[in-house]
Image 1 (cartoon, rainbow, N blue to C red):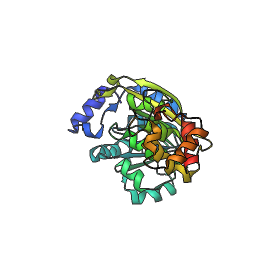
Image 2: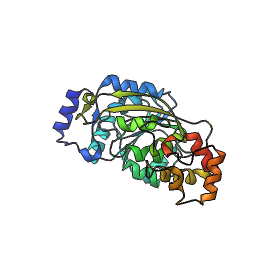
Image 3: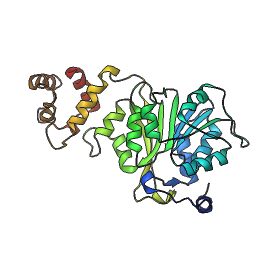
Image 4: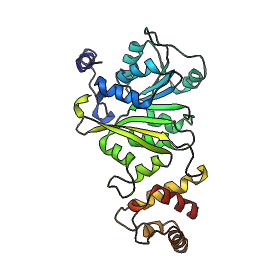
Length: 297
């Protein structure tokens, strides 16, 4: 779908895009193909797409994957996608049966993928539906307004997708790819990297979107860790340490953690891990946070 086609379609349907929903649609064919290439999609793959918009990425996914589930919040766009791909929208109650049952083929020629279109708030759906995404890949141009919470929600634990390829704001991409002592290293970095290894990323210019956003964008590629760094029963402690440690970035982490743990236990843990009592959270590596979690549990 070219920019001219996108403009024409929106005008014809009198669809005014909403900034609060993060509706900046990627139209550049080269960038769309780069995203799909990063996902290394095989015919048997199941793809979760959040925020399909007018479906330019959806179209490419349907050409390669065995199954695609797209979640769209805007009812106007859902109506268009139903027409474009010859399908019907589903609600969450009906979705379970659809995913478990025989594939529903699209009516368009040269497409054999199973396609499910869900009209829902993706973040709300992920929070209330405890689904197993471990055999899925997330490939999406995420709505910028909710990209970070969606990634944190979806990436946590053994039910997380095996691969995430997502377009986000450049500043979010830098946080996802950051390492200890980087300016962008923080809570988002650790809450995602505890389960995913950052593999690669590339920048996408604003003019590749309609309307052009006021910020730069990037596509990130994250791979689920083959071996978990922490047992699942320690996740809550890890999250608590990370959030407390970064609650005031310029303060010493040890002092911040004293709000939740005894001073002597903290002193012993810091000494065992050879962490200076004056260290700030941004200096600690992911591995140090993992070991600290084990000692403070």
